[in-house]
Amino acid sequence: MIEVRNIKKSFGEKTVLEDISFRFQKGKNNLVIGASGSGKTTITKCIVGLQKPDFGVVEYDGQSFWDMTRKEKAELRQSIGFLFQGGALFDSMTVEENIKFALRVFSNKTDKEMSDRVDFCLDRVNLHGVKTLFPDELSGGMKKRVGIARAISMKPKYLFCDEPNSGLDPQTSILIDQLISEITYEYDITTIVITHDMNSVLEIGDNIMFLHQGEKYWDGNKIEILNTENKELTDFIYASNFMKSIREKAK
Amino acid sequence: MKFLYSLGAYTIFLNKVFSKPEKWKMFRQNVLDEMINLGVSSLPIVAIISFFMGAVITIQTASNTDGGLIPLYTVGFAVRESVILEFSPTIVALILVGKIGSSISSELGAMRVTEQIDAIEIMGINSASFLVQPKIIALVLLNPFLITLSIFLSIGGGFIAGVGTGAMTPYDYEYGIQYDFEPFDYAYSMIKSVVFAFVITSVPAFFGYNVQGGSVQVAKASTKSVVQSSIVILALNYLLTQLLLL
Image 1 (cartoon, each protein chain N blue to C red):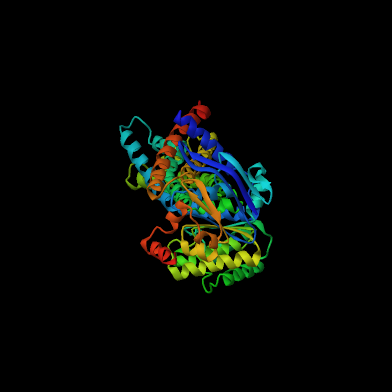
Image 2 (image 1 turned 45 degrees about the horizontal axis):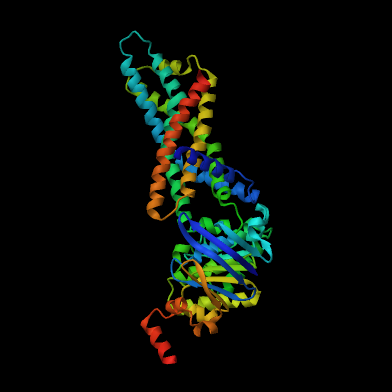
């Protein structure tokens, strides 16, 4: 479980996060949703330690991240898997080398054991015959899958996915959502998905936090979100005329 | 004030770079890869520049000593001194800044804007140490060899130009090359090559690693890194000369 309390972050005069508190639950798909510029990526960077919050606490299973020693932080990060929006695959390495990367650094596995783990991870994300390809030879969906395979290679306790559906067609988006969800339940890990895709919200949103202009405006689950009367959230969900008409009909 | 801020940031960056590698076996392999990537791939450009540099120095010196008052072996002597003391370590360093420095800055800048550095960091790896330290160590180890090769090729280029054009006999040139040789001159050249190798790799790495933005910023960082590294090399060249030769 990851808990953030009273997180505040500013860049110069601009306040990006204002007093955010939330509990990301273990074994659930925790979604952070909001419009562009609402602070989704910043709070994720604060949680994984890429940016230090100006104020507030980030706790991993009760242990404060910013009070950890450098060594403890490094150890914790080995239990974090991160799927980046653009994949962030190492473009000088093949798919196999990308997935092996953390194993080579942190484990004492033999080449055979590492190759077996790569095969397992690729199999888990339903990708075959791509081990020797370089990232620029992959499609957007394949890159996301390789990103997930790399993220789970070290058997993480925490999985972060930054806009996993961006740039993907609807069918592939759903497959990626389902894959993330399956992995979360199968390995009983704490998964945090940053998204503004409503399909994802309704598909996998077990525990949702809605950010608006750097503040937490709402939290709940995918059932509760459909019945909310929170103005900012409904404006976000039903932004399109099509969604508005569906809501009117439902009413 | 801005200069002091940059100097402070550069020092903090170096402190991060020179921390213990995560895995020595991987580090050794990375150093070897960088030696090939940065050093061996620079051999052709170093060889071509050095050869013509020696040839031009010889012809220019010979054309200024053809009055008969100055002995012909002075040409060989002047070539050796200028090549060892100045041209090979400094000019080659400036060339390598353009080739290696811009490549390091662009590579790290591209990795930064595509979040590859963040990916390494999130895995619990010190990205600065992992990416930059092997480059610095590789060039610091290899640059003295590159400069030694450059010295020999420059002297060889001077021999071909001087003797080939009939400006002097092989004996005059060889005598000048060996005349009043001070071994410390070579040591001085090697000290410069090590210091310059450090600058060629670390300064562009600093600019590339700290890029913020997109491809335009990567390009700007690359240009800036080459300019700043060149200035640092020229300033250190003066400083080292004053410290070691006076």
